[in-house]
Amino acid sequence: GIQVEQSPPDLILQEGANSTLRCNFSDSVNNLQWFHQNPWGQLINLFYIPSGTKQNGRLSATTVATERYSLLYISSSQTTDSGVYFCAVEQGYKLSFGAGTTVTVRA
Amino acid sequence: DAGVIQSPRHEVTEMGQEVTLRCKPISGHNSLFWYRQTMMRGLELLIYFNNNVPIDDSGMPEDRFSAKMPNASFSTLKIQPSEPRDSAVYFCASSSDRTFFGQGTRLTVV
Image 1 (cartoon, chains in turn orange, yellow):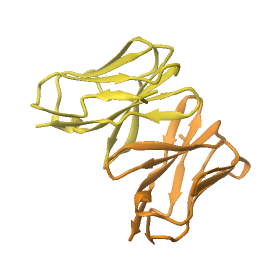
Image 2 (cartoon, chains in turn brown, purple):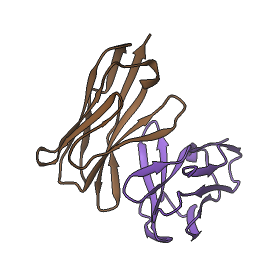
Image 3 (cartoon, rainbow over the protein chains, first blue to last red):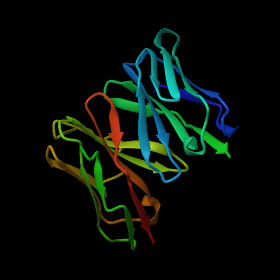
Image 4 (cartoon, each protein chain N blue to C red):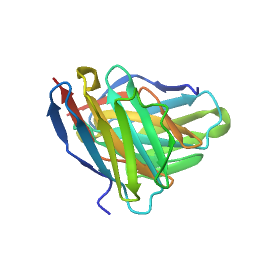
C-alpha cells in the first residue's frame, strides 16, 4: 500500500515561533488532507488540499502532487496549536494516515 | 450542522459483553467510515459505507465486529463479545470531499 511519512516526529516550539511540517507519500493520490488532533483527542480537519496552496488564519498548506509531498506551515504558534498533526492521502475512498507530528508549544 | 455525532463518549464494559457504538453523520455526506485508534497501530479503517451500502469491511478485525447503516443518518458498530484487546478510541467520520470526524468513543474492556 501507499507509504505516508511525516517529519519531524516531534517538535517543541516556543510560543510565537514558526514551523514547517512535512508529509511525503509514495504514490499518486486523488487528494490530501491535514488534520489536527488536539490534547482532548478531537480530530479537526484543517485542509483539503490535493494541490496548490491554501491559507486558514495562521496555518497554511502547500501540496506539490507531482513531487509527492505536502507542507503545513504554522506561524506565530500558540499553546492551542499543541497536539498531533496528521497528513492523510486519499486513493479512491481510502484515507491513509501518516504517523503524525507531535507539536508542543510552550508558553 | 452539528458535525458528526457519536455516542457514547466513553464506555467501560466487562469482557464478553456486547458493545454498541452509534454515529450520526453530517447531513448530505454520502460516505461514512469507522476508524479505530490505538497507540500501537495508529488510525485504522474498519469499514467504509457509501450511500448506506458497506463497500469495504476488510479492516474489521474479526467476526465479533459488525457494522450497519440502516439509513443515511445513522450507523452502528457492534462488538460481541468484547475483549480487552478491543480497548481503543473508535471514530466515526463522514465525507463528501473533506472528511470530518466525530469526537470518538473511548472504549475500555476490562
